[in-house]
Length: 170
Image (cartoon, rainbow, N blue to C red; front, top):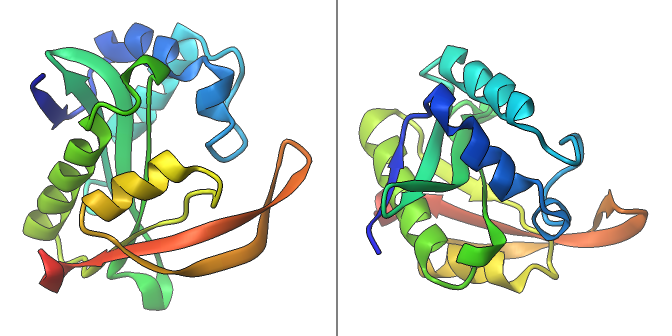
């Protein structure tokens, strides 16, 4: 299966909506996404990503064999953290465990480190999301610690893990 990341296109909205309108996917993401997630929601998200500052927002569709199966992005932080970007991603449930996300994370890191002055990319998956933690480890991220009782999701107090990859580790 050929995996790529590419700039979003408005025509991707339907595939995006299909991927994210799944409770299991949304249970591993931060709050704020509509459920069910509609094609119109997808168009609005894609438009926002296409209009975002290209020096601060690096947002891509994840494709597997030319079909959009997920989303990945790195978002530059501000102030004293302006050489740092937070990584976020998700993939449709039927593509979990196939190595697609690991490849997408590697491609995103290569892009960000070769096109920007960002020195650190970090991610904070929920500690119980073993699949996401493994993606990061296989993509060269190091586990830096556990953020205890760091989030409330679906009414439950959760730990999160901190992972990071540095430019010099590429």
